[in-house]
Length: 158
Image 1 (cartoon, rainbow, N blue to C red):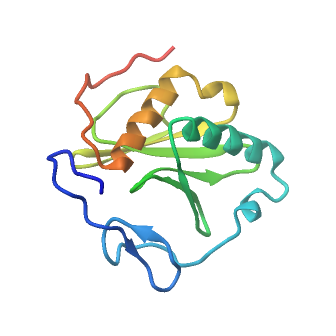
Image 2 (image 1 turned 120 degrees about the vertical axis):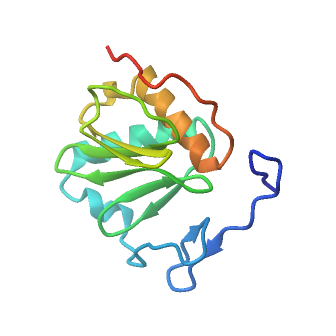
C-alpha cells in the first residue's frame, strides 16, 4: 500500500463507473468521453513523434498511465501530473508543481493557492533538456502524492 508524505496509507483510487478512469477523489470532475489515442495524432506525425519522446522520457522514471479525453492527453501516476493538447505539429505541455518557478519558457502559468500549473509549447525534442525533465520529474512526484522538497522560487533558463 502507498503512503502519504506523513506516513499514512493513501486511500484507494476511485474508478468512475461510467468510463473506468481512476482518480484520487471520488466524483472528480472529468470527461467520460473516450477517444482513441491515435485519433489525436491523425495527420500530425510531428506531434506524434514529440509525444512519443515525452512519454519515453517519463517512462524511464517508472510506469505512467496515459488517460485520453476529447481535448487532451494526461500523464498520470497516482494523480494527473502533466498533460498535452495536440496541435498540428507541436504539443502544448502542461505540468503541476507545488512551488512557484519563473522561466521565460512558460507560455502560461496558473496559480491555485500552493499549486502551480505551467504550460509551454513543445515544438522540438531538444526542448526536453535537463531543466524541463527535472521539472517533469518533480511534477511526477506531485502526481505520486509524495513529499516534494521546497526549493528556490526561480530557476534560470538557458
